[in-house]
Amino acid sequence: MKNDYISSPHTGHGSRAPDDELRLDHPPRGIRMERAFDGTTVIRVRMFSSSAFGLLGVALFWNGLTSIFVCFAIALTAQKFGWNLPAFSFFTEGEWDGSPPPLWFLWLFLSPFIAIGLGMICMTVFQFFGRCVIHLDADEGRVFTGIGPFGRTQRFSPQSIKSADVKQSIISTKRTTITTNLVIEMNNGREIKFPGLGKMRETWLTFALGKLLRRA
Image 1 (cartoon, one colour):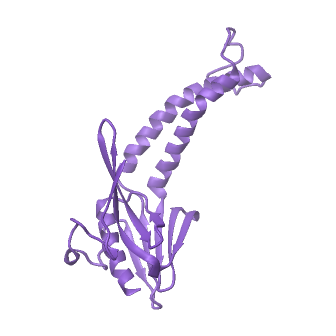
Image 2 (cartoon, one colour; image 1 turned 90 degrees about the horizontal axis):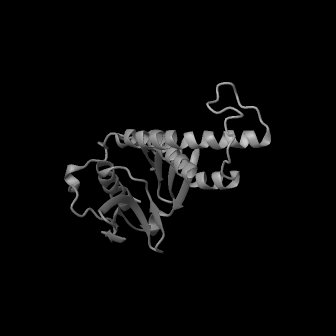
Image 3 (cartoon, rainbow, N blue to C red; image 1 turned 30 degrees about the vertical axis):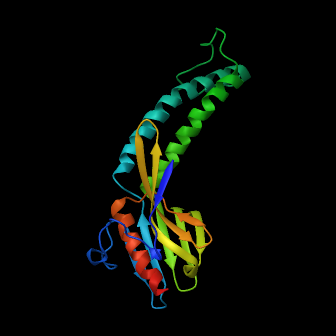
């Protein structure tokens, strides 16, 4: 993996749109900025984008396929321990008269598929309902990422910021994949990495953070 990072004091814009084409009072769709009388600025970003529907389709396909094998494993487990399955179950007792695989092996085999499926569900829910909130004042900054009240808050000092820019990751496998994320980098090397927000929103946030941090 190779990372290219363009940085300058507080912010760098690289080949993105110049400052005179961006305005603090005209954020792109999905971003709302609020400014209080005490100088506190709050930027709220909705994670939802059209790519969420593609992720939803993949998650439904993967979990639908995995659920067939999970139901099979549940039926074998119920048969082994003498549990009664619901009447609407596709698998009922007495259907497995052969020699099924050991239960521990079956559940162990299914574990990574179940984990991936659950991860896809979490990612899909985050893409539809997730949010990112930036609080910024003269003394402290906070970045919250999560769903509703549940998530992660990262705190930082505005005076300790080295740069706020888009970090590009180039993953070289059979096909080269380029991903971008907005990153706030501190003087001590610590980084606050944002989830993928899309080019337009990342461009505006880079511009907005540069303006706001110069005033902090």
